[in-house]
Image 1 (cartoon, one colour):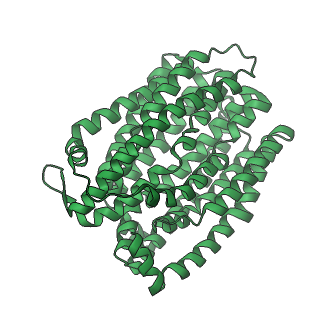
Image 2: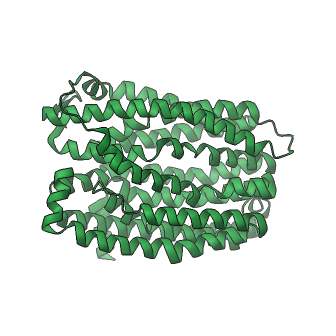
Image 3: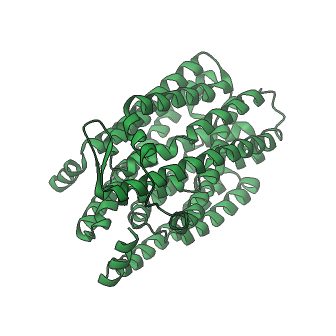
Length: 454
């Protein structure tokens, strides 16, 4: 017990505190949001609402993991940079030049990707929702949501740079506020009975908060990047060598995490899709809360690798990993127990969720996949992506399993397939990859190679 408390205290710095506050807000507000949805939405509208969210997640196909790549490249440059009293970037001119070149490349990429994103999301939504013969009015709010979500997408590279520049505490302070703004406006719209305009209102509030915060608090940081003279630059080839591997892993993430609700909508209708969506929304809270221990450590991982301080890296990664997995287990048990009690005392609300058996399958599978997060974070901090193969394999298996069982068996089959693949393929494969890469990368000769690319 003492060692667990000491481990917790050693990781509870300001950045982690804000990250945990954000996750705890989501944990607390998530059930209330679900309750309001069951009170103010019909079962059909609930199905459309969660399927909207699953299609919006298609932005992963436009981003291709670049946000994570930006963070990692920025963290390696930040080892020679800092902030002055006014929040402007100071330090090695070459490092600043490379960081500024990264900023300009990222902004251009996301602008072009946003245009593709709007078209792709709109077409995908039309194809899926037109198959339903429901009388729910979805076209106008769907178009509006595509536009607003693309605006949010375009600020991703700015926050990735800020986080990569080791301003983690401020990033998570912002995200805590963002979560509150989004949720409060979401609640107001639900209670006002705005139906499928609810996610549009919440997303619009989120976008406005993003723009206000950047203008009010990060103006000088952004101005430093824009004013920097580009003499030394990070070349597109360097980014692409890492991103092409990240891209496949991130695209795989859609099939691993977000395919269930659209498949349920297509083959079982909006009511079942609503049950799948609201249940998976609860399981995703596990990722949010558990991932807080890792997310705030990524820039520190990058700095430790740039300095070849592998002993410190391993110590940080082990502690963060233990906390991540422990949080996931406790959270899964708590969520299932809460739904069990709801089925006894509040059955009218429980029927909006999946039954307890498939819920347990999805929760157990989520714990398995969360256990791979410390491994992937540790390896990617080296500006390498050895997880691409296992991610693609998992995506293919889970995608096929979800489609086949969703069409033929239903949610029990989807949940069972998800659990089996995560337990027998994803987690064991990730452990073996980590053991191999750590043995190869931390030899003196390979350390020199990694240092040269840092």
